[in-house]
Image (cartoon, rainbow, N blue to C red; front, top):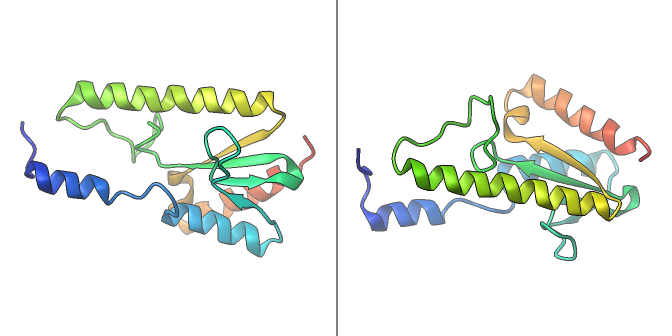
Length: 141
């Protein structure tokens, strides 16, 4: 089964996918700010450029998209049927990179928290997730 879009159209679609300031990231950042947290965004000085860095708490937060980070068991993650070997390899490399970055940050003494896109979807689950994130940040390392 081939792609239903031309190469130029597919390229345009893929280039429009945002890497920073996604809806999920903005949601988490605004919630944390409203609750008095001050943070850095995509700090280049740290490996992996975490989405949110809370220096006071020595904590970093990654907001992962379920597809791009291959969230196993999630309804938002399904492996594409076309070009399957490419996607399997790409998503496996993404997961390996995530694990490597997490290990390096832990070695530097940071706490690493991950918020998945699916945990922010229904408003009731969103509130529970964000409250849990705040409580996790407040806990001493």
